[in-house]
Length: 200
Image (cartoon, rainbow, N blue to C red; front, top):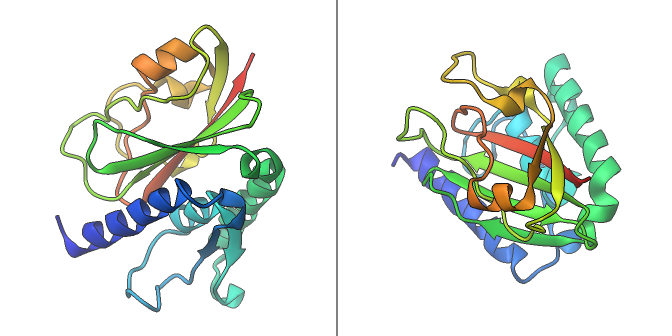
């Protein structure tokens, strides 16, 4: 595993472990500059923004450095964070197991169980040709959930197999989501998939 992947994996694991003990509402997570001042890494704006949106989102950079594209991405993710923060910050954060060792993911569930959001971040190149399904947890087995991919625009240019989630909303049972899981699209390192779910 390269240094980049090890560092990214370590930081993500520390963030998830802190979620077991510290509420998301008091855990700050900032969008840093394009080139990180402490590690020298250069990460895509989409990844930086979605990682920050998992917690109490903030900014720690000079906004004058942003390109028009980066600004648009940051504005979109920030607006999503503002629209969902009330129920997410009062809900539960559940770290998830993944069959793909290069993915670290978590589920945020509303206190009433009616809504959730899945964050699935890839920190290294996968060993598999096709992505492995991500199983969820904490849902009602007999309930139906409408799920949708929030950021399909982050898909890489190559195509490997058909992923129904990219085509539009899906309605699946809690049991299916917890036993089979969700087939997420192919992703590159430093990509975060964000999936919203709502009980119907």
